[in-house]
Image 1 (cartoon, helix red, strand yellow):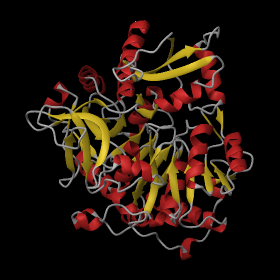
Image 2 (cartoon, rainbow, N blue to C red):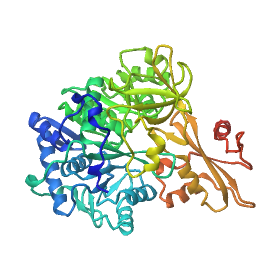
Image 3 (cartoon, rainbow, N blue to C red):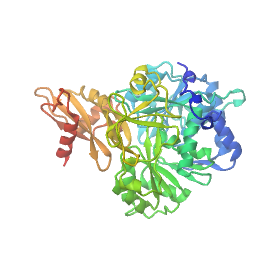
Image 4 (cartoon, one colour):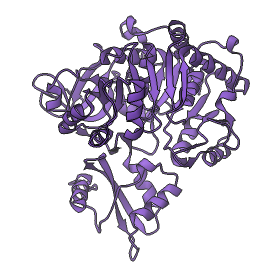
Length: 535
């Protein structure tokens, strides 16, 4: 399927001023023309100006074309937070190749599903990152999927790869994609083994990023630090890299979110804005007990991905010396931001800020799709300028998650407060949200059932002070089978290609399942039992 034919919701439905008539490649050309000598990107020892970023990404795009990669083809983009990630992404945007934004932690099981669906022509991955060698993974995917014609690594040292910056061609005859073509695909953890694939158009994403930059006070003098993986919507466009570039600001990439890498970067580069998930914010806050880095430039930390404890928010403001802004939303389109200067948001961090656009239409409905009264719980559904019209290659998912009127189901339990503010109270669906990384419990259950001696398995999320939510695997054994220990289960799941962040944090045994009134496994009861057993 040619993804260029995949359109967002009819732009005429929304105010015309939201949409710019440029692809992301064209936008970069405009930014480079406006801020040619300004530093656009800093990562490790490398610094690229806007002009250099534009020139290199254009020539890499031409190099891809010279290797047979054509507009409308797809790519797996699995680089870590490095210059190569941004260069590869904008080379794809320039050529009209659609990258699938994956995480460095993805392994065989995750990547294989994506390759089956999108039939990628290119695989971008580092030779090695965090002790993991990507060459065998890519080689395995190339054996399974004939569409993969090119492996591009960061340094060309991985067997069978070419170095990204060795791709060097003449871009003069490359046409820009249409602004309403699909620019890339975001992934979101679903309730099945396959992730939800969310296409974003060029105009739609620039619209989201520029509006986010305005809401967050990001300007040309700002310095944005991407500490979370840049494959996430949060760090790509809320306001993220794209929002920062749109203002001529400097973007700094952290290889890992650890405080001992992040804090020196804040001090050296005079970072003003960054984003974190609650467990990371807690870790940064605790680290200030012994760290004396100069963080005085830091003005704002955005926090999203999972519920934020009010105590942590207040402690973080004191320890980091900055304001806290909550960001709530989902990759399908909605983004809400609190006002960091309004202290009322820190009294109940379940209360979210207003949505990004006036046209965003939020409803809280019961199981019959009827709006619930203020104070009552229901599912949040939303439509707006940046809400997707359909998922990629999944009519069934689109039919279940998007209503006939164009509302996208969030899967979040919500309520309106008496003052008309949005309050998020929990999740409807069978999904784990571990340290901001969301994935299907069903996926891991299916893998655990293959373990020798396991008759059945159930995986639940359990509240956790460090992770926000930890993963507990419950198993029921076959007769006379030996109970595995957690390390043995981890080793087994790794061999199945399960990503590290999906491995259970806790393993428990049950003789018989607690069940609901209709006979289903009572996962709420299992979560309570897991809390009790861990103490």
